[in-house]
Length: 113
Image (tube, rainbow, N blue to C red):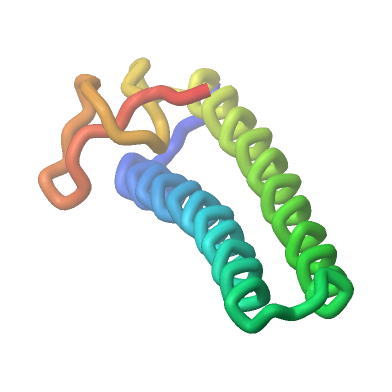
């Protein structure tokens, strides 16, 4: 059984929430930028060839962020498994929601897998 320090575990849980939000925001922002590029291209009456490479590069970056998010989800799952083999009770690790562990500075966290 692993002995995890509670305050450190809470800090990790909060960072998991922050990082997950950052991935989702990045995905949303890339999609919004693609929309703006297409809208600007159409309103400027540019030929599709003029923006094709831009959109392809953006699609590539979008795919990489989504792949990075998948790797992050895998790392989060590994953190959950490590926590389950620890001295912490089943309290959850890294996502908002109901659960027995409540820290007034960050709110409630729950298991997400």
